[in-house]
Every structure is written in structure tokens, then in C-alpha cells.
Image (cartoon, rainbow, N blue to C red; front, side, top):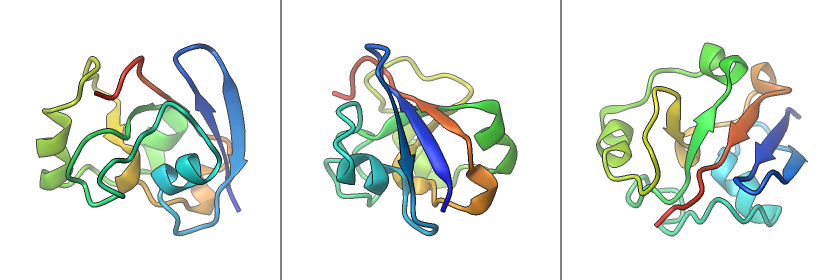
Length: 107
């Protein structure tokens, strides 16, 4: 089970054991991470689970789908080259030790 650290905009860091196959959004909402809303429940329809992936995660993640790229055009916070939607990131062992930095706002 990979450990992922969620770094909130206020500086709070929370490390979570994420079951393989779960989305990083699911793990955040199940563990009370405030910086991820996930209003659409993970269907890639709202962009309220926007995050910034670190280099480790970026190196093991597949490229974003066309649908994810469309939703990233609607994020409330600054979009960066490492912006992703956490609902579209499925946990795997290769992600162990990765960090998601959360933006200041989701809406």
C-alpha cells in the first residue's frame, strides 16, 4: 500500500496509506484532507480535486486523458505543468513516497 503525502496550502502535511487502485481523491476525502473537494465523486466532471504532483509521481503517471485536460482548463487555482486531477490518479506501489500539493482554492 503506497504512502502518499498531501500538502495543503496552509502547510499542513498528512501522509496516508492509499489502497492500490483507489484514486488519490478517494483517499483524500476518506481521510479528511480539506484541500480536495471531489464534488463530482470522481467522474472527471468538476475539477475540484485539482492538485500538483511532485517529480516522483510525474515520473510514474500516465499522461492525462483528453477529458482530464479539458477539465484542467477549468481549475480555480493556477494551472501549472504538473497540474492533475486527483480523481484520475489511481494508486500503485510505484507511487510510494509521492507528494500532492494542493492549491489554495478549488472553487
